[in-house]
Image (tube, protein in one colour):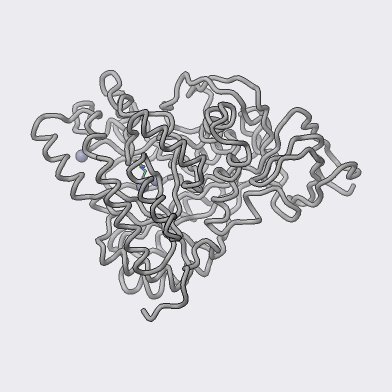
Length: 475
Ligand code: URP
Ligand code: ZN
Ligand code: ZN
Ligand code: ZN
């Protein structure tokens, strides 16, 4: 037959359009869009369903070794299985350099960690912690060329952070080579100062994590990162933005024509500082950086999603088990907040939460949902148009949604290896009923239906959005 699969009568939604049509798939790609397309081996009736591009989760952490003895719960198998069940068909986790080690060694290490394990396709961002001459002049230019065209830098965490001089050298390299820079923007000294003060006062409960990681420290670092990028004239993406202070800085930069992009995550829509104050040590489940803020911050984040300040909506899945001496309880329940592993799981709940709270509640429309969760992340990280849209020639990565189905989030129903979700009991409307990656069904009714190893590694192009505004600089 002409097609391997025909998906009929679905409401197709892209970042630009919504229309009803049939989709013809062949050899893992979309090859036809229209009516009465012809014969297929298999027909999937999508009447009453919405057909959207498979989600692209451009920020998640899988099997990342950590210095302090904490161990991530999800490897590439459980993490991508969970992603598939939540409607996501591409993930971009991190290959993290360790200080004193080569970046290329890190990339090799993460290929070994992921080989034969993934349920969905994946690319890598790098994390640059040690920008030596060799890294800047040899390793990064070569790696960017080879398909690792984006990397994250940190302004905080002792074992990760760069000083401003190092940030400038990395930004100048990105400008020369066409890489996309992501920044974790929090002021390290402000956090260290406040942490010391709070610990002296005996205020060490998880709640105080949110006090130490002040939104002012986030705002300052966001502004600084933007200024350094303006000095070099290179685009920049601020990851995991938590509230209005940092949003104002990004909006200000965008208003001046700078190519500054923003990302936010479900935790900043759904959680607040009160969740860090849950009974006993339970607040540790919601410890992440930057921390969730307050209801006014949630409103500001919604407004920025709606108005276009943010281009990317990612999970920042950083999986640590709660009841685990290698997880949230690394140092026991009486440990200071400063020693709780940072991060929240969210690969599987990312799309259902934004769909229900955003689209169903009419805070954002369906095309914006697709833009934020698939199209823009694919464009910004050099995977478009292979990923992130429904178009002829694109990979057949599709997620079919029942927009009216009611569900309740239960960790028991999720497919990650974390022993909790911060969203336990949350009632949602809309769910993915069938998800295809390169034409293969990878999840059905929230359950996995592919095997580990189906997912392929993706090389990223140098992204168009990473291009500088001006002509070549003299430095
Ligand atoms: O708390 C968080 N976000 N942990 C994950 C690592 C990071 O900085 O994104
Ligand atoms: Zn970060
Ligand atoms: Zn992260
Ligand atoms: Zn410790």
